[in-house]
Length: 135
Image (cartoon, rainbow, N blue to C red; front, side, top):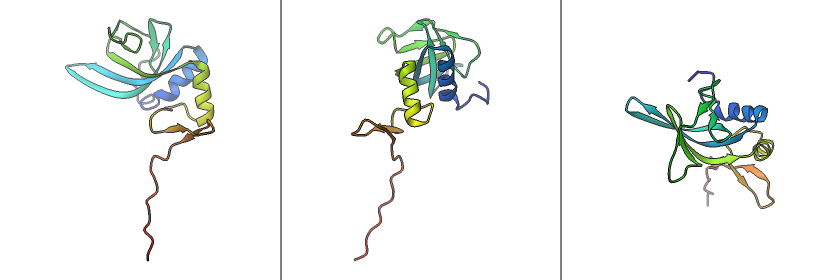
């Protein structure tokens, strides 16, 4: 994993999808090996049904070696990693989210919400402290 890509997976996966096609995926990635596992939130691009582009292991494509029997379309492994999808975006959906938020992701969870008018707005992650009025 290079220092240049660490923490930039959302942007780099989005840019790769825009240039090369595929489905943008947000989920988690578990590093497997040496008897230890470490899971992080991550973004990658599915290229067809048998390969994926992971910005942290680029420039090679990673070949999907196996899929979980319970959810084969959302849980799969490569040589050193296990990927679990949480959200999959088509090109059109990813570009729409990027246009609405000004961000390459992540777009789910506590970062954004859709208001009553259907607009995507930033969620107030850190609410203002309430002040008590003096009587």
